[in-house]
Image 1 (cartoon, rainbow, N blue to C red):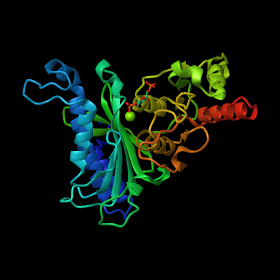
Image 2: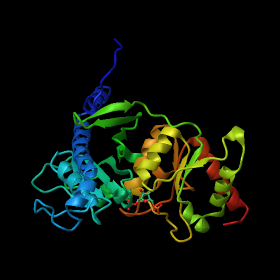
Image 3: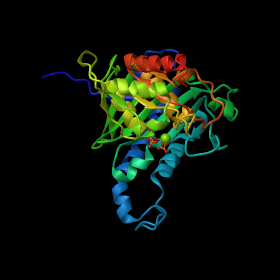
Image 4: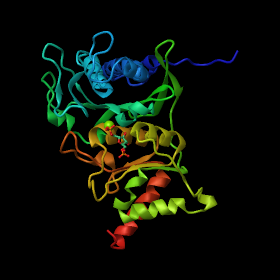
Length: 341
Ligand code: AHM
Ligand code: MG
């Protein structure tokens, strides 16, 4: 009989920890708590259509409970699962204006958690993939005290772990603690994440580009030229490229990681900082993509070197296979040197 290794997320985290004798196990316990929150959110996401039948958001459902928006539900669930584990000193969420303190009756830990509870929420009602994104840092302020805004405003290269979850045809969790990127698929019958994509490496070059082309008119001239270049015919370089755009960053980045190519949410003349949030969206996927051998830039610099000034600041993002991102950067530079900008 063929031998197979049945690797749960829990076991994978523990085995990863054994390879680092200096580890205290705190990060592992934090990740395990996160996995529980994600399973609960996944259950609710899968019920989304039914909830609509039972009562529209804002109404009471048949059980007399008020039906909350799914993104607020996901936000609350992340908070409730993570506030009392003793691992965190502070949290921040895309759904909340300010930093989120750990309640005073719970132990204060050494880590910082930033998250986007439900990314791509405009896709919920169409039953299209959505996701959750998280990013973990070590605290900078002294241990034992409540965490601070400064603990949250760290550049992406200081992340100790990051991950995302895609609620799609199945629920998948992809995470890295810096060494290797691993994907787990949720088996709903046993409620366990099982290792399905060990050691994900992004292809050196792809043949798909992913961007909201409806904004073309407002783009940087170098980006316009790059897209036209991708649409030209040249068999040796796999052009013309295909285009795929789901409009849920997690799903678009996940496909890019597996198949290669480039995902972009650029700045444009209407949104000079782009749309996506540096802390909750760009940095975590940058950490994962770089750990898988890819590149993540804002068009001028490495995303993870950006020093954040605000919790909710936005950044342009170009992310994906090294050859594709480097080609794009050449087009941007060339347009600037030609004085087109
Ligand atoms: P959200 O946080 O409100 O869900 O917005 C973020 C989403 C990303 O998932 C996606 O890449 C982008 O918005 C799509 O934006 P657009 O509709 O402008 O293409
Ligand atoms: Mg989002």
